[in-house]
Length: 212
Image 1 (spheres, helix red, strand yellow):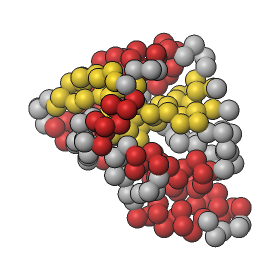
Image 2 (spheres, helix red, strand yellow; image 1 turned 90 degrees about the vertical axis):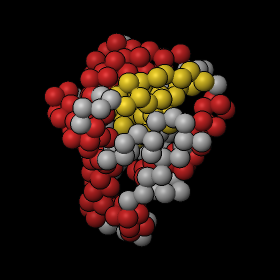
Image 3 (cartoon, helix red, strand yellow; image 1 turned 120 degrees about the horizontal axis):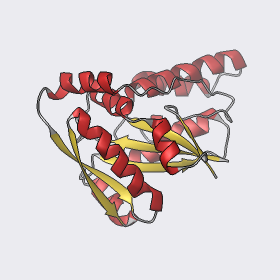
Image 4 (spheres, one colour; image 1 turned 90 degrees about the horizontal axis):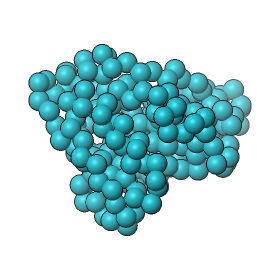
């Protein structure tokens, strides 16, 4: 069984696609996994993993210069202070946050880490007081529809409960289409396209699969 480790990027962060891509490219996932997880996690940019029949592999990119370029297109020479909320009951999250905050300062983001009790964290999320929130979700079911839904659909649990407000008309249409599609090749094509959109838009910045 695996779980996905991810960062949700909220509306208070500049919500341009380029800025979200910059955050994703500024994170050295392999370095993060090596430093904290000692082989018990696998770097990723995707929601689905190799256990899912709908999995599409994407390159795991770390490109700080491209991240700086994209961020500069959005921020210019300004710097932005952002709040990064973590669950204080999860011991590794503070170390993760400190490493990620160190990288994000290179793209103009000054990160203030808030270590919070989970209930308090949820309240801050709903008030829009966190710009980045660390999430994780178990992926016990290999079904791609079930795994994707919480992240990519407007009423998906992780999307809605964490006030991400991600909505993409093409994804909604494809998710509705795949429910009624029985041809396996066609289903794979649909799931591939959904993953492509989700990875490109990066409302959720997935960084690793953990083994549980």
